[in-house]
Length: 130
Image 1 (cartoon, rainbow, N blue to C red):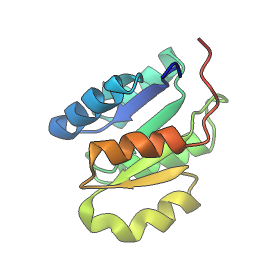
Image 2 (image 1 turned 180 degrees about the vertical axis):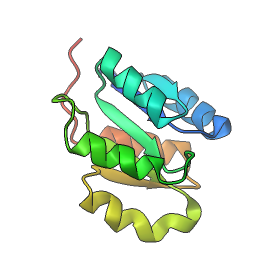
Image 3 (image 1 turned 30 degrees about the vertical axis):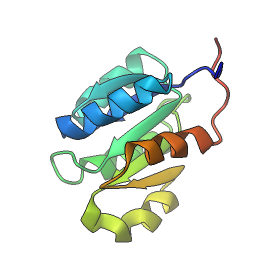
Image 4 (image 1 turned 120 degrees about the vertical axis):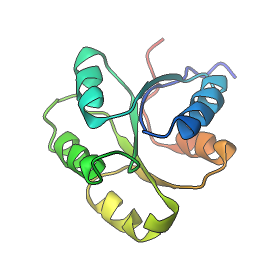
């Protein structure tokens, strides 16, 4: 397809999960930047624009993802991109909380890469500039 991919910031501390997503979403034409902490995420978001953030709750310390979510949704940066939260298997009960706190969508682990790719394709994201 001739669709342009999106610029996606992946915030995930598990390399095996990150590698699966980088490979699959890269094949879909997206450009991924991967960071492993909320501190690195803040720095990267200040440096360049993104169309989407994939935010995993698998970060240390444990509540970092939720604090980062709250901070980004408060819109410290005016161009704060939409956020998709990736929840651990035992966190299904947090899906509602994630959307209430401003996530565009929730991805439940363990996930199939093809399903994640489709979810991202179906998000109401603006068409990226070429």
